[in-house]
Image 1 (cartoon, rainbow, N blue to C red):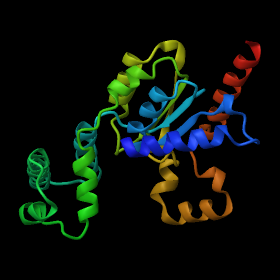
Image 2 (tube, rainbow, N blue to C red; image 1 turned 90 degrees about the horizontal axis):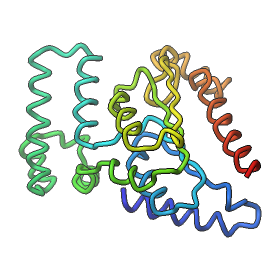
Image 3 (cartoon, helix red, strand yellow; image 1 turned 90 degrees about the vertical axis):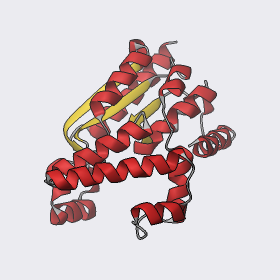
Image 4 (tube, one colour; image 1 turned 180 degrees about the vertical axis):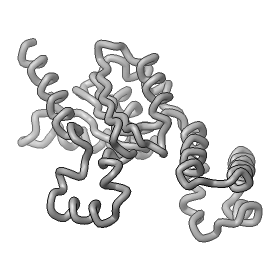
Length: 230
């Protein structure tokens, strides 16, 4: 996540030097795992004008447990399947805590197909990620927090509670979309393969839940008008 933050900062620095870009109006937009990147970048670059955080998580380990349980519930897992999944998670966490190799993971857990060496390395480097300290450090930067009602990846109640606790009310806007999934696609559309495909091909702007794009545009226009007033 620190490397991603470095890349974002480099991109912002590059953009500020482009003749066709107003360097005083640059902000950040990011989704999901960007919840661990956006606050790092905004904390280090105080000239950024805004942040739009879509379905962001706060704590890697709590988010992982929430996601596991939510998917088990969604898929109608039995009590035995649920217990087995939680035991497997605890085994994985013990391996991560002691810095085990992917070979040790494969031997203990299996999952050779989906858990590649590269993915294990990524998880090992980032499983302690928590955005709280970086959120404290970026306090004051205007932020739009976008949350979905059908999010099985992120505990949106926890995310909102942390953001509201850490960030000043004057700089935080929160937008709720009860009918949206983690990707902010309409829940009913995402559940239907044919509707998802047809919408993506013939009306791509309609993929997102109603209001998602318009609300972001309104947020940015309000910031722009505030800057003009100053």
